[in-house]
Image (cartoon, rainbow, N blue to C red; front, side, top):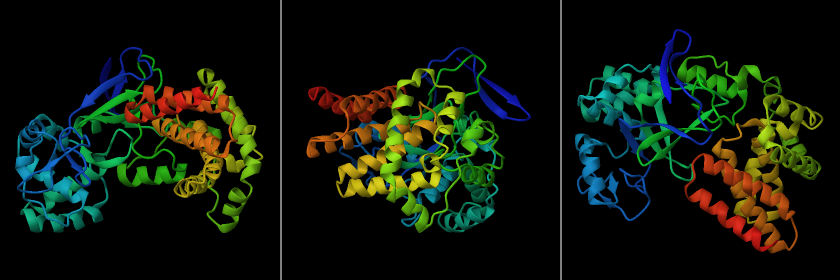
Length: 411
């Protein structure tokens, strides 16, 4: 299904050797080391359930004797158990664990030694001082591990796509290049990192994932990629899509906020029409189609402006906390419209948000006895279901199915 290639321009890359259907899991990678934030998840299978902590270090928790045995040997817990400082950050714990694990021969260790380093020397020097004082590792080695970690670690996500830790997956870091318009995502099954296609791939297509949150504006993405990964991004989203490059960022001023928030009803009708249009045509959408769609709304740039949508996202979260469902629905529709147009259609963030928004819209209709047209709500739920089925599934997909069942009762 896949083959590895190497070139001067791209370095190592992974290419489809045959046609791959959207939603196909195409590779799985084992971690060299992981660190979980807190102890709410089993350190071996990452499940949230009844846990028992390691009697010695109190840092690691397991859900069963089987997971404990696996973690002690296969995940090398015994190498660092009881050797970490209480005030270390997740990054510092990850780097210290790398130091202990690198003393154990193995394939992933050899791959890690060959990974490129970040140029951020300031961070690695600060970390080296703290770790060396506790472990006795040479500072030069700690700085090397820190720079490699900064450039190559993955954020570990639970089945709701929430951040729960950090992990180093050398074989994944060594073989997948970045795109701000990726054709694949990574997610986690237990400790394993799984690569999945989020659109149909033709033979000889390079598999590309995102190294960062692609909802950020272009210049913000490019600056981060240059500082951490030392390359200038020339992907489709940064260089190829003129319509996407034109989505500038409004200055965050009281005036811009008032324009967006104060005139939300003026934008809402257009957003509904745009969402309806893209969901009805989603099987035929191309980049040219998206360009024409966005150009139709050129007189209202706030609809597709990064900063304006950030403001709407914040207002959406605030409205959820206040359980103000009508207001949350308004802001949520503007955010969803933006996601549908500027993120790859199979990107799970869009499916997750669509599912959350449908639950809010259902609450509004149920409590207010008014609200959204059911057919419009169903189209959003159907999209969320399709997106999550093709990507991460799990409990989020179950939640979407519950909303659809409730909507069916209203028809």
